[in-house]
Length: 507
Image 1 (spheres, one colour):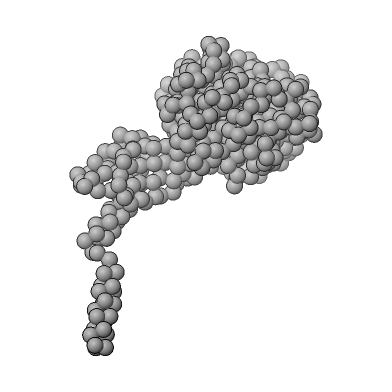
Image 2 (image 1 turned 30 degrees about the vertical axis):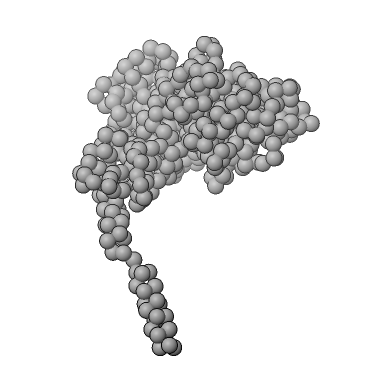
């Protein structure tokens, strides 16, 4: 009897042991699928596929066996096409369209298009929109279920309105993260919170967009001179055969004398931030970029020189026609007959000049606080393109809080306060995230009269609220394998992105 029991137990343990061995017929196809996915994503990247172009990506993936289905998602990106639902009247939608005019922009070499549609509350919180914008207060308490369902699909809501205790309902508290405080706003300026400057924080993304979206940009289309730049001297021309990309603006005047071209943009009031411009200088030429220019005779000048006898890449101060070198330089000249990127960083009284990313000059000066911008060639023809001005993270806003706007972040969470006022620390912009099922974003921003700096800020928070995951190719795949690669875009701003590909069997 004992022998029979021992034999049964032994057979049982042998059966258990063999039953735990993986089934080759099941695991091997999954492993092959994983290898295939890795080979496909890396080979496509080596062939420099445009991961933002659905047609191009799809054409590569169509070479996969017919029994395999696929999907592609991009993470950490600005969506190529952002659909905005605006709950607003005709005047308000015109304001929003003006902020995003001409309805598209380019950043890191990627074209971003904006589609704005007027809607009402009954249709706003559908999956048709990436982000909903509210330009007034609306009682949303009866829409809470719709709102939470909308947000859990990685959507966003931005409201731009003056907040006060009388309209602070449960939605404002629970969805937008707002509460009241005993403090009263003053007339002091408004600035970015310290937490927003830490790249580890979610709130930093909105600040990053603000500091890289241009508040002035000119790529010199064929009618640029007719409405942007005022000519002081010389004859500026559009060159349809050159540029980055074509066309470009030519500052004409080959002699080092009075025939040179001098233009300026009188509607720009520049104080601090970054100026970028692409420059092409002929042999022996000199290019001057003016900033904080009063339109007459006082200005700072950043100079690129391909003529050592005229000086090096340097900073100058012009006062009543007299030009004086300021600061320091590394005795660097600009090589002629090729395009260069000039970057001027202005932070208060500190100036830095970069030539193709190399720091070539710096200065400290505080004579002129703000003014317009301008350009001039001293010798030889100079071509310029892509003039771009952006704000910096230390930018200060004039106070736009309503005297009754005694608000704060509901949980005093500094990671969710984007703008605050000096001294009072009263928030002017509060963000909220991971609201519903760990997804969804909201923004409350105090209303202002929308000067240029506010336009860029509104654009920035709408981009943040719209999300940074873009489904390029969508397929429902059962039990897929997933592979990813990481890339960095940095033409305009540092932007690490993740490209995720999923493969699965059709049957």
